[in-house]
Length: 132
Image (cartoon, rainbow, N blue to C red; front, side):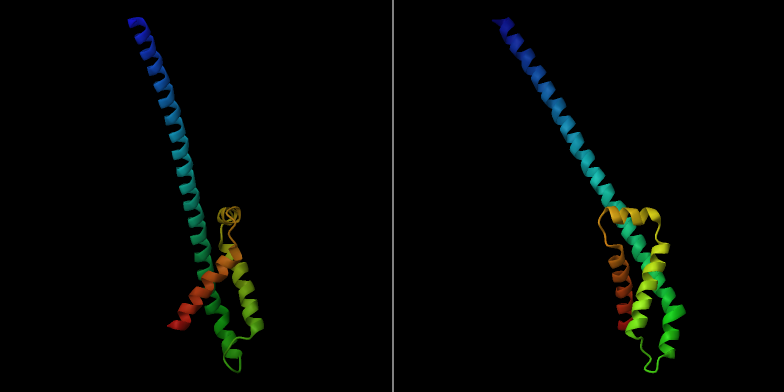
């Protein structure tokens, strides 16, 4: 009888050990996936920040080099729709030149509309200018 109890205990310990190893493996995989997800999000956030910085820098440059001259040349001191559209295209082109290929690839892979991101950042900056 003692041999049967010892055999059952031995078998139970082996099953429990195998179950523990399996659970550790599953938990390790889950933790690794979570870490990967967090790192991916951090990478995307860094790329978004770079795109916003490029947009804001470009908007400031265009304000200094183009916008003031266009406003001064206009009879009413305001930009025409065509001038605004042209400035938007310059903003996008110059901002994309400032954006690293790595960040552009990350944003594209993440499904981010880079043009909308750049335009939105610049429009937010322009709204701040108008408010102050």
